[in-house]
Amino acid sequence: MASEAAKETANPGSVRPGGRTARVRSAVLRAAGDALAEHGLAGLDLADVARRAEVGRTTVYRRWGNPVALVADLLVEMAEQSLPRTETGTLAGDLRANARLVRRTLADPRQGPLFKAVIAAATCDSRAAAALHRFYETRVDEWAPCARQAVERGELPPGTDAREVIRAVSAPLYYRLLTTAEPLDEAAADRAADAAVAAARAGAFVTTAE
Amino acid sequence: MASEAAKETANPGSVRPGGRTARVRSAVLRAAGDALAEHGLAGLDLADVARRAEVGRTTVYRRWGNPVALVADLLVEMAEQSLPRTETGTLAGDLRANARLVRRTLADPRQGPLFKAVIAAATCDSRAAAALHRFYETRVDEWAPCARQAVERGELPPGTDAREVIRAVSAPLYYRLLTTAEPLDEAAADRAADAAVAAARAGAFVTTAE
Image 1 (cartoon, rainbow over the protein chains, first blue to last red):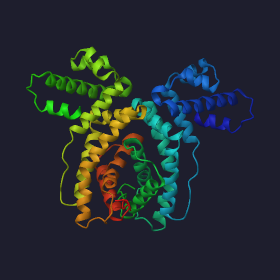
Image 2: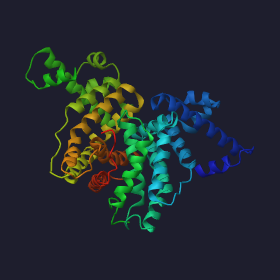
Image 3: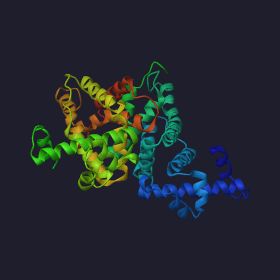
Image 4: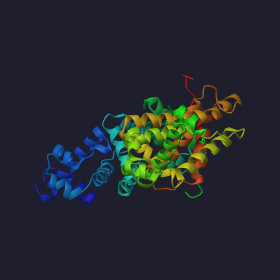
């Protein structure tokens, strides 16, 4: 269904019912994101989302049913809207680019609270958790080639788990966002990237499985 | 108030009203922890907590007022109940001990869901967030001497931010818990510790500020 919706979105001038369905989904998910960013998960209300999206309440209730289903669908859309990774030619450059992108997202006044809210939703509901896991899998898969290429270039030891390298960049930024009041500044992003590079070079992410 | 309550708890046979207050708090917070572990934040209900704690509903409503205040107080108690750090004589040994302790906590059938729930609460409410930040500050402060001693022993470069070293150990474990469906096994804990050691040795946590 997700890829069907994506196809429809690629056809914005379409007047087919499918095109309308995709536009409704897009408006509703945008409104849900706004509501989550403003009030967090506890303040997500389907009637409020319908009003913000200028869509009939019945449509929203029939299609999503409850706030958690809305969060799960929002995560599907977030995974679809992914941006291509940066290629700088060195692992250190690629991971700094990744860390700064993650930092910008988490420090953004709309995106930061939105990410906190979807993580909170995932702790409450297994469907939201599954959608969140898929979202991060998509993101990690997009950037893992940076680490694989670093292995090919001889920058990292053979057998390095590329996905663990990418996760190592994001982890300190999310941990800082969720457990401290300290600012997510660019220095924190660069430190996260540099720490991941140093650990990867030292072989901390070498697994026998890969 | 927190330290007053701690003093009272140290006197379990006391019949002073203060002693009773501390026992009620202890029973209510235990029940709140159970409820959070079982149903997550969305299922935390004061009447249910009062029933589980075998305490009058009015007492719970008067003293805590709402679920978020209960979560905040639970975090105060969790910070009080802290355990002393392990000293093995090497940074690698100390950080592996720390990582395994964090892993055991997050993989525990009661504690894991409880930590997810308090993190979710912190995304919804600034008082819960402040209590969560203080809890992690306490934990980080307890373990930071490992990294400071490693600097003194010449294992780490001067100017290493000891608290960032400790946070680097926990971050990948929390990130794994919150964003993946992958198991929090001992291998993940050891990898987190080893990565932090390698990054710290390479100077990734050297700051001009410290």
